Image (tube, rainbow, N blue to C red; front, side, top):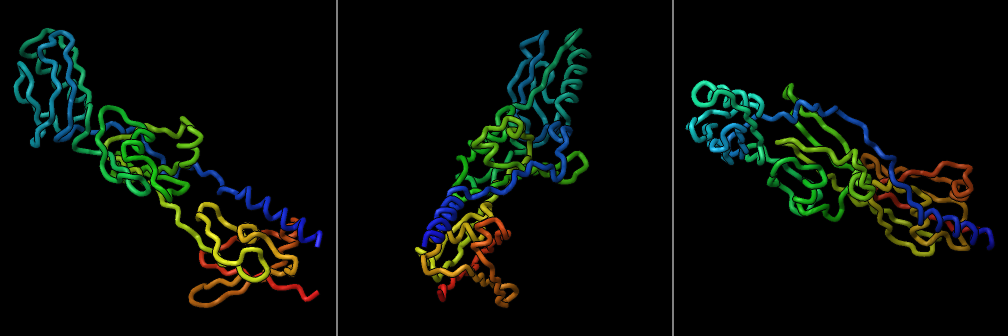
Length: 286
């Protein structure tokens, strides 16, 4: 009797400390800094300043044919150029016709042609409006924040200079809960932030447990046999030391038997569970 009470207390402690899967901050494919140097496109909004002649300064939207209209210069094609190339082009045109020396700055303040998208487990998935620089947390906030059922990991997808898609995986809890500043990366035009859903897992626990029935976990919790028994209230005083796990694999039922008392004592390794597993604790014959 006392042994069972000790075991129940141990399993209850296990339930209160459900492990979280190990943090994974590995780069699956490094996102190059060069990818952030996006080209100017139609519907982008530019902030243009000329130090020597403020009359040329403008807040303009690039037309569908890639042109902008400026005082003195009229229509100028900038579509497909980087901001540094656009600065050089405007500088050359101004110095050739109007100003002896022109210091020009071009900044994209809104990427209408290459919106950032946030999809998956957020409240308002889709494209978000971007004004100037935006961080990963700001993008998630603009998408309404995380939705119920979000998972452990999000992915930032970006098209690299080589035309291939690059991907970075980020631990959501470390970013949003711990506030790790190293993970709050700046986003680039056309980036896609995919917040993974955390699928629910249902385990069925029957036999000599205090609360037989269904117990639920999140997939990222990586539930185990001892956690499932703990979630079912622990074993009864009549429970034997044997737990039987039944699971369906490729249409066939596979049965795993183990001494869960040995697992609780640390003599055996705990068993990971899968969605739909059924656990049965036998009654002791003694």
